[in-house]
Image (cartoon, rainbow, N blue to C red; front, side, top):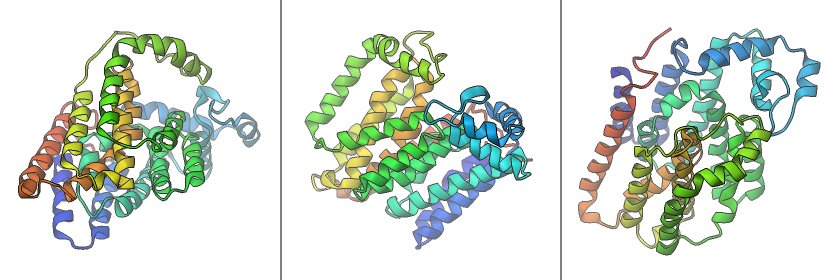
Amino acid sequence: MFVYLLLFPFALVCYRNIKNYKYSALLVVLSMFFLLAFRKAEGIPDLENYEMYFHWWKTVPVSEMITGTRFFIGHMTYWRLESGYVWLNWIIANLGIGFRGFLVIHAALCMIALYRFLINSALNSEIPILFLLAFEFIASYYYVLRLMLAFSILLFAFGSIKKGNNKRFILLVLTATLFHRSAIVFLILLPVLKIRLSKTIIAASYGLLFLLVPIVPLLYSRFIMPVMSKIGKNYYNIENGLQINRIIFVIGFLLIMVWLFSSNRLRSDKEFVIGYWCGLLALITESFALYVPIISRIALVLFWPFFSIALSKSMRFLKLRNNKLIIYVCMIGFLFLLYFYELKGSYIVPYRFL
């Protein structure tokens, strides 16, 4: 665990002591890349299956790859995974690169996207990267391979919607669905961003959360499961009833704190608004995860990371200026404690080199 724990203070020191934020982001991202590239794959959930898929797809003829390609419902070869991911595996495998090389390329692609996001949207602040660490993103990069490729594309989509380039945003989101179908939900940002953020909207979001919790089983069985079945995901059933998790409370708490700490001027900032809406959407999505835990990945990977921008901006332009240092220290301490807690019992602990 010590190797991972060092990453948090290393990121903090880099951002606080290196004046050029691009160098800070580069050092942190490179350290994450080396952790990912030189990790041992054995014993990590899903990776053994992904390795089996990788070697299988290498044997598929190119004609079958072409005829089996589908958009959204998955490639027609075995396992029906997304066509973009299948093609990426096939190309890399047929270049003579093994699964270890694939993991290195995967890490490189993800870290390049993360670096671009950090230097373009993070206000020269350490908050976004510490936020991602606290919510187990290093673990997600380890073994949630398809979803993290989709997320990496959505990092570019975030930049497009921020600039008002909706066509490019839609194109990037559709591209992300070629690696994980759940990325399609990111399109919901287009209509919700037309709604002005206010106390009423936030209160309504919490009200919707309390309304959804008891009726999720009905909504899931009537509307969501039929769609899941058509795309080959009919095994995501409600099995154990309601399971309260701590994450939904953490999300709710941070949303309230950021709103209280932000000024009226900041609440009209477009980047802040997008980030805050992503936080609200994560909260609402997490209500479904109380019954189907795997849906938590959608909330925590596709929406919640972008809330780090709203958090970062609220800390930078804190209206409670006299208490700024105290609030900052408390927030950093909270993120570190959360990071430490999430690492305990994680599949990636202890770190295993090749």
